[in-house]
Image (cartoon, rainbow, N blue to C red; front, top):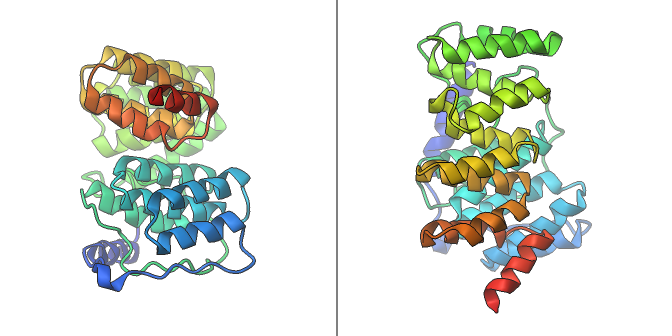
Amino acid sequence: MTRKFLASLIIAIAFVGLAPTPSRAAIFVASPDDDPAYIQGTKAMNDQRWSDAVLSFDQVINARNKKADAAFYWKAYSLNKLGEQRPAADTCLQLYKQFKTSSWNEDCRVLSLSINGGSNQSTDPNPDPRPRPDPRPHPDPMPRGPDERGPGNRADKDPDLEIKVLALNAVMRRDPAQGISLVRGILAGDQSESFKQHALFILSQNNSPDSQAMMRDIVLGKTAPNLQELAIRDCGVYQGKRLDDALAEAYGSSSDVKIKHAVISALFTSGDDTRLVDLARQEKDLQLKRTIVSQLALMQGKAATDYMMELLK
């Protein structure tokens, strides 16, 4: 982490508070040769039809065309405008998961910083969907996703944090069994909290049975309970649907609203509308059920669509 990069982040965060007034509404521009859905999405944003914009950008994402990464950002931007901060942050995580080297991750990072800070305003003071330069590779293994381990929150008492993370990542690549053993020791030991969070990040990207078993224990709060919420989020981003049964179990066994919200977000990120529908049907808390339904309303799967029709009967 360079001082120059930290300074640029501070400047970006400062601009977050300078969101334009309604009289200075941004103009969103699409190229005539863009995908029709992308053009419709930018038009919807200009008309402040944020829900229509989300649907249009979803079409671009599902088609995986050349502007899919940009569509992820503008979908998150539109969700934030709708007041759906959690789905917006999850959409940024999906962008990072599918397009790790996209320059749009920088925009999503700023958006996520604003969301995490509790702002309901757009994070881009003068958005301009201009063409982006070619993606730049990120050679180091430190998390680039918009979470508490990201560049905006890397301060730590451990001066050797990045060196340790680089070493752990190298061991995990070369000898996963040894890497998993090291992660187990780190999480159970007296290492700094930031190092434990980074170790969890590295573990979450390994798909071996041993790593998944360890992630399952953390998701269920059996191991490193202070990392349970973060592990739940990582499962949604990096494990796909492989641990969704553990996520659903964590939802049912926990009375912590934060854990329940984390599970809802993780299942949304992994695209598991079937399990979200199951949670919605069983949930007695109207506020939580509303949160689940708001996520399902943004999903395109058959289970989500059928459930929307069921609610309308």
